[in-house]
Length: 299
Image (tube, one colour):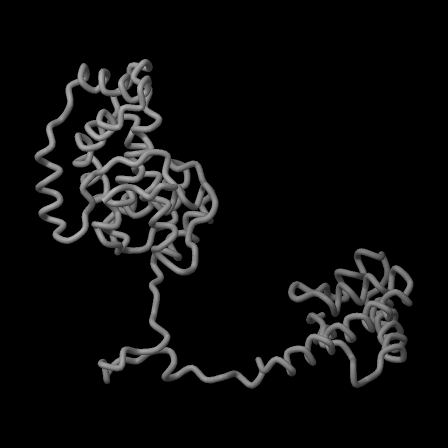
């Protein structure tokens, strides 16, 4: 089989189609080139576009692709597919090989082989992409080997991995969580009567019905607008008291804390709060009163 014409070079090489064991035995029979032969073939390819030289360079390194691809079997993808993607990377490396630099092709090719395999894994390992940024890709391909066991990483281990890979600890935790997940078929195989797939027990949530979602979103928007209008009508001190007492999701201020802030008594803060709330109630329709006005903090 030859490479698709979209690639920069088409070199007939054996591909892992059919028996993988037979393919591996075949590529292991190709001789390893000496440094002198490799230099000579590289010059023939670079100076004369000699495809026979390119073929010999590729064939002598196919066993390298098999070895590298074997290291990525833990991602659940077929070994043959990993090898074929690695072969594409090898051919790209041969195309760009410059013998005048004094570097052996094997050192240069490893980067291209791994790059193609990495891209293949990221495209196919999951429908939902698990690694999109540079830091995530580094974690994706190193975290498994750096974990001491199957148990989740401890805080100390998370910090060690983050320091070694030069990423943030929270990125390590996030990638570990992603890698720990697995895909579940939505509908069970018809041949498996005992299978329990999500389709068997997931039901539509009435609260998520599109018209209701839109209605609630509009109601929340109207309430928020009314609340902002009412707050804008207050003087700065009253607005500060209402926001601190009623509009925080947590850690609401107490009367005594606000009394210390404004250097007045707690009773005075209560009076200002009461008047401000009364004014706001007159500006907001009772039916659309915002849910943000929850119970205040304890005195």
